[in-house]
View 1 (spheres, each protein chain N blue to C red):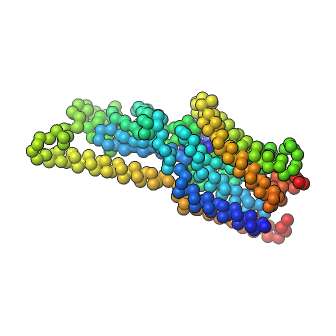
View 2: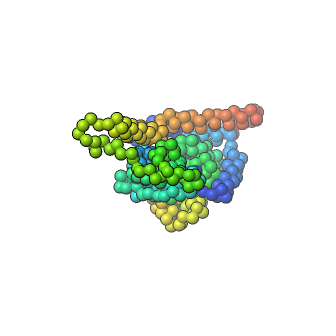
View 3: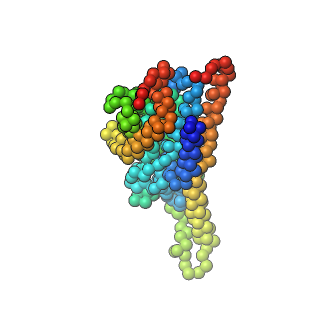
Length: 211
Length: 207
């Protein structure tokens, strides 16, 4: 999910940078002061997660954790992803010029996951929340794969060919992310439910679940 | 409880950071290429992971034009015989956004290759290829100095290539300190941010 330097054209890079800048702006504006440590922790988690590699011939894939981060952080996932990707770019994963595109590819689906998690589908019990956690975990991966394919299509590659690499190869990752996100949601519900509710409630302090 | 949760996150991250770089492969395409004799030999692999067989390696000139292309064999290796003496760039792009490249400077290529078109180089080009000096063809008497020189040159080329390859592999590896440094960077950034917020609104009550 990390596009390297020298692949995308300047218009695509600029569009990605602009979209990510807007997302980061919204994220920074919406973060409440007391949630800064959580953003930093999830940023660190995103950074480390992308270094876990699963061999999927002919290449390997890595975890993203963008679904989980999105569920917990909402729009604040944009700055978290930006910092994590900046560090990875320094390590050689993904290009610096492609930072904007890469940030958008990972963070935008995370924001979608944030709202998907809050959809009133399947009740408000703990089991329903865990199930929605699983769905959003997989959703984050697939949406990122889709965005990645769209970005790469502009380079003249066939969409299906790229989508194969970006989406089909990530099915094992999506399964793992679904399990991880579901487990994290279940764990937080037991140990610290206010973290989930706060995260889901966003700036206005709406209540998500009374479960 | 809150503290316990925070601690468990940190412990989990630290454990992951310590465990990962040792077993996990970095996920980027690495192209290695070096001149060896009259050819450029190289390999394509995923940093820390497996070799990539059957991928196309584009060979680009200094102006970005294509000089040729080769495919890696089942061991992920390739061999390219340069036709001109100029800087070569070996590029692999796997189609899903990963890209790797490796330059081979003109100085590493055989001196008798013609320069890129535009500069007079006919005499050099017409010179017969490797000036003999195959040690195996030497008679049963003492090998000539020339043959010994050629052999030494060839051996040092092979050794230099092996060293360069090893350096490249080490360079591309993600190390524990990289990961630890990254986490420290993020926590430091959060600290700065909180400090700034605190200074801006010193009297703000905690919710």
